[in-house]
Image (cartoon, rainbow, N blue to C red; front, side, top):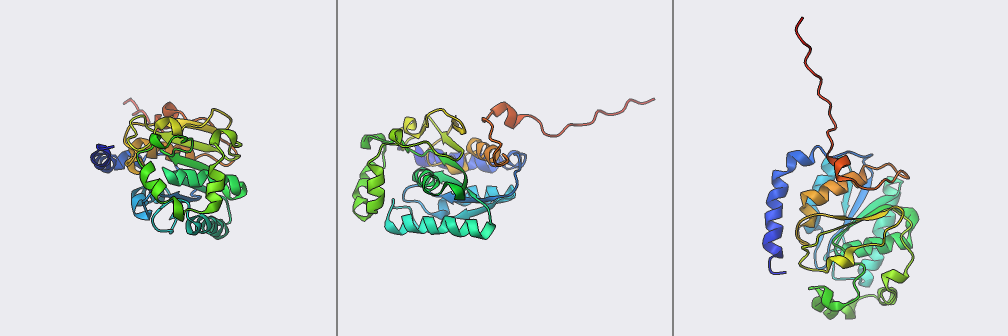
Length: 249
């Protein structure tokens, strides 16, 4: 946990150095994407991610709900309205990308309104968290429980393992060196159209981690209804064939 901030800063430097490489990532159909920030964070924390998504041609949106202090009534209701508004605006389902607690919100939104969600991508999201000590943010989260929505508290009593799997494709990005949450809590059960993908880095740097962004690019580039398992070899294979120079006569 102590090393999270400097590691995240270092990863921002790697992100800046990877700009040219990220430009070669696969392109999709430019559909709308809503990015949800992590616990206590705001849209400011997802600027680099959204800027990268826009450079790939996607309509990347922030959630516009201020700081993420957990599932307050304002956030629960505001997120529902934000998703519905974006679906109306673009006239198609949207992809939800959630960082940490934002990923838990994204999964819940997909459960409540699957027809509005194209797919879910989580980044270091401890949706299987069952023990408070598994998270270094647990103390602050518990202090904020009095302002959380009663509806969220009722849903939270049901363990993830007892809930039905998502009906939309879901990709869970995690890192074993996560200094905020237990990485095991970020893993989904194996199954159709859902998988867990490991990257190297910190929890606080996932939003600008080049490996995580490469995974996001690959997942977004899939056509609706044509899900395939992720493969690093497929992602990194050359996409441009160079013509061999003709031999002189």
